[in-house]
Length: 329
Figure 1 (cartoon, helix red, strand yellow):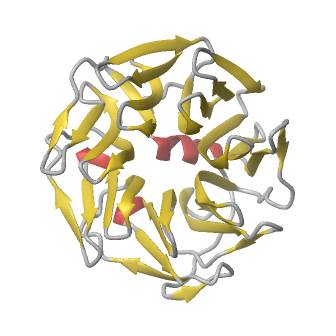
Figure 2 (cartoon, rainbow, N blue to C red):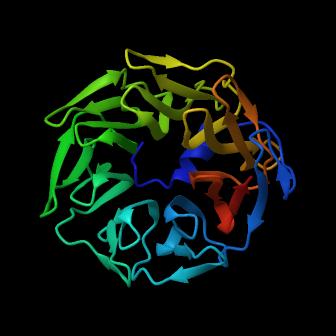
């Protein structure tokens, strides 16, 4: 399946049944009070990141970039109409957004966004860096079946490809010599500072891995789902314990596709989408929380969630139709 297909269409194709919708302003099992924030847009949002709880960016369809200053969300000019899938920065004045097309990477210098030169036409889904001078972006080069990995060394971006196919969807690392990437049919790969190696089997057309996050080199979470080949799917969370990848128990929720993960060692959030069967569309938002012992459900809205990020006691989750949830203690 080509990466150019929007993520929401991939999710629709993967799922077939289920239900679930809730209300706003509820306190979940994590102890956080969740409210829907006014985003000022109806565009689908896919990625969220911030340098602090009062400096948060969200990106999405049609070049949408939003900024939160601790009080309200506002629209920033991106200069593009491409779909933006992810956002990450080393500071408030050094932020990258990645997406699809000729303007597949943008950079924010604290004042304005501009297109990054030297980037091949591609569909990028994830971005993360160890520092301002060591940044990775992953996805797929346009019209290619190989995984595309871009690396910035502080001077220029270089491209590498892996025959993992068809694409990485998420990337995270604990350092410049320990970077984890996972994706659509690609499995899980690790970069040791000189080469990439597969650590969890790829090539499975029924396995879709989306989000990657960890606390250290020996504690990493990867979320996604497994299709059953008949139109249904079951959520999946892998955890690396320093020696091997294991499938976490009690998180195989039928007809749930998990899209992203973030947290601390004993306070982890994974977000995703449920399908309501009566109209064949993704509607039910799902937030699940891990307290270091078990996973449980948080309150959820009626629109799919695709990205999550937080700092301290604040957690932000973004999704379709401009949905932004904020969870505070």
